[in-house]
Each structure stands twice: as C-alpha cells, then as structure tokens.
Image 1 (cartoon, rainbow, N blue to C red):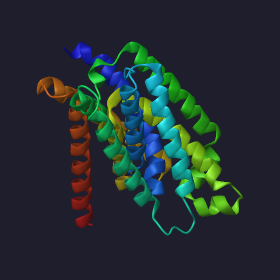
Image 2: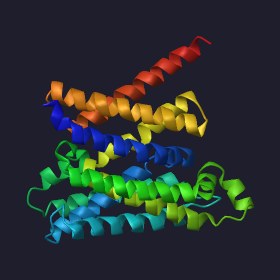
Image 3: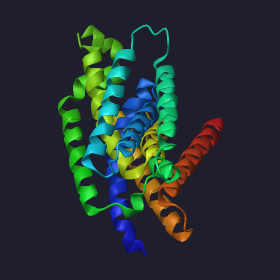
Image 4: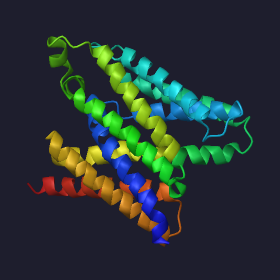
Length: 271
C-alpha cells in the first residue's frame, strides 16, 4: 500500500519546494488570497475547456486555464498602487468570488459537474503519474531559475517596495512578471493537486516560519520542513484512516499551523 504513495509524496515535495518560496513573497505583500484567486481563475479556465468539449488533461484545457491566470496576473499587477483607495486584497477577493461563481454556472451545464468541483478543490494527487511529476518538476525548475536570475528586483518589490521605487525599478513590470510566473505555477499545481492543497502549500509553511523568524533563509528552511511534515503526515493519515488524500494533507497542514501557533502563543505568554 505504502509503495503507492511514493509518487504522490515526491509530487508533494516538489510542491513544497516552489510554493514555500512563493508563499514568503505572498505573505510579505499582504495578498494572502492571491493564490486562491489565481487558482480559481485556473479552475474557471478548466471548466470553460470542459464546456468546449475538451478533457481536463488535454493540452488545450491547460492553455485555456493558463490564459485565464495570465489575465489575472495582468489585472493584479495593474491593481497595485502606491496609495490605494481600494486595498488590493479586496480586489483579489472580488476576483475569487466572481470566478468561483462563474465556474459554478458553467459546471451546471457540464455532465458530472459535482465530481469536477470536487476534483478542482482537492485534486487527485494519489493517482499522479511519473510523467506529470517529471514535467511539473522541470517547469518549477525553470521558474526557480528565473526567480534566481531576477532575485534582486523580485525581492525588492515584495519586501521593500519603497526602496525599489527609489532605485528606479518599474514596479508594474516586475509585478506582472511575478504574477505571470506565479500563475504558471498555480495553473500546473491546481491541475496536479487542486485548489485547497495548493493554497495550503503556499500559505501554511510561510505563516509558520513567520512565527519564529524574519530571516528569509531561515524562514525558507522552516517552511520546507513544515511542507515535508505536512505531506508525510497527510499521506500517512490518508492510508491509515482511509480518507481522501488531498483533504488529509490539507488537514495535516491545518493541524501543524494551529499546533505551532498555540505553542508559540503559550511560550510568549511565559516570557
């Protein structure tokens, strides 16, 4: 039985590697739900592809989904302003709600819509193939290389945007590149693992690392450790308890978050 979990576990580790890093950017920017919004846009694209007669695993479905996330990336890069009348998080929330509602409307016209909703939410990482794991890993390596090459402006616009403006960086251009790469990752991740699992990998390790330190490299190491524990615990629980794999991993991440949050709160109260 446990041999069946080797590929899913490798896929989870791949998700951990890229999403933990991106999560540090997202948390620092204060746009916690941008992942959910872009993931839901990707899901809307997949739903539209279904309505057009494509299978979720067809290349056409992937590019329709990717196109929707790129539109979201462009919109979010334009919505960020130095002096915000409307908080960007509110814009992201509206985008998520509208894309989710639109997906439901389309799914109402697709046979087996309820099953597609379940697949979009928690994915089916238990049945991931070797080809999917390899392709996803290669894609994330490319994204990681781009982030590494552009690390100085990327870090600046996320962690110190005022200094980035002083240095003459074009914030919107770099924002668009960030969100475009982010959307590329999210589109692939949602197809692999579902919306809720992708959100958990992005946000929970980053939040737990923030509890302990502000140093980027230490936070990244802590986040990777949390991703490893959440993946291992969730997959193990899904086998022992015979529960859905994706939902089990999400709950494992939730358990880790509340455990460390309460533990740190109690520790701080005694200082």
